[in-house]
Image (tube, rainbow, N blue to C red; front, side, top):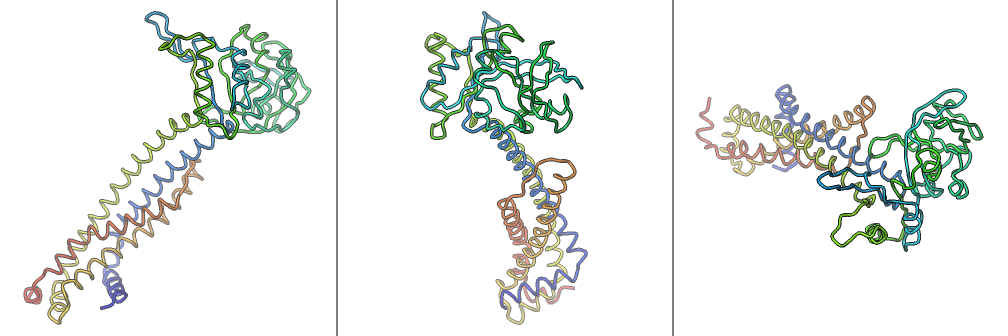
Length: 405
């Protein structure tokens, strides 16, 4: 019997008990659909995190103030205030560094003529907009002169602008009060969306970091320095050079703990995506249990089929069918049943992933790899769980099978 004829006979045998076949395939459908959806959720979360990290700019290195140790007391990140704008200027002169922006943040109530809004006031240098590839809706960004003069000017994020002046408004030239001091709005940034760590990048007001130092907080240090490396420079190499420079400037002895923290985009991405990878594997593992249950259902129904068709098997063997052809017949039935459930499960999984995105607004991404993997697993499940019933059918004695009632 040709392979095509074997498949046709298998399909006819499965159609004879359509309801039983459908219920058996349901376990495989649920298992494959669950794997598709779970992997899609994990992949979507990973892609979203990578996109958010890239939105902070390309080739970005962040230097933050470190933790402090005072006797038995250990303080957290940012407790040490040894970073200064002089450190930023020294970093600017390093090879491989293109942009540098010192940072010093606070929160304040912003008051306009129409409304007031509490938001993050972000002190920055004039190169931040280039470093983060951040466009402007209206006006201009901070100038070097604004930074040198500690000017009372502000660039609003789109969310802060909407709350203070109304959606889509151009407030360039208007005045807002920050800590009861008048600041002139010189620009509005384009929307960036949510950052990788959850904060809304658009809910911000950017002023010169020198203004935050002298007019808002009365300090001389900075809390962070954001560095943009040239495209051809290796990030890890530039980060190591920055660390060596700061250790020298801060006069840290060999073996003494750093009073700063240098992080690259690669490190931040690996930390965040490792969590999503773990969740993806966990969810996929849970979903794979459904595939095992579906495979057991296929084995069970094939064993029932062998019992019901014992006389048919005996007749085939009696008229000359080989053990291999009988084994192939039942194995093909198992694989056809499994693949049919797998195909339906793939379609159901894609539709469910789309529904998760539309209804729950969770990012999902159905990849070709997950589809091919699910299809391959469905085929392998059919072979694995169908082999024993097929082998049992092929091992029947023709005489005993013909006498079977």
